[in-house]
Image (cartoon, rainbow, N blue to C red; front, top):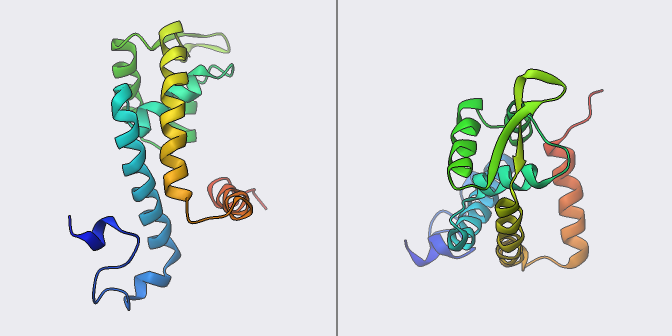
Length: 156
């Protein structure tokens, strides 16, 4: 990668691109940048951002179904099945019958999964800190508020 590709500044000649003011592009680039940092930080735990996200939700007391995971993470259900398969193979999660619908499965973290999540969470936070370093604490709070509005729009 070129220095410009790894820094926060646009490559020479591209700083006048109309994409610099395109919110969709900026959101996608910010996501790609933070995901790349997250993947690098989580590699030490044999996780990636997507598998870490599934594990984080499996650790919760909500016991999400595979469909709920796919919907919440905005992933194709087949992608979620593959992520759960990998986590289950590593002994981090198990599938259990959904008490609300026996035709469905919920994903529950094992003790090993909860320990892995706790260890990985610190690395994920460090990567997030690196990505958000240019922002003040107040700006981070405001960014999170605005992104929640975009990510989870309320119906009119």
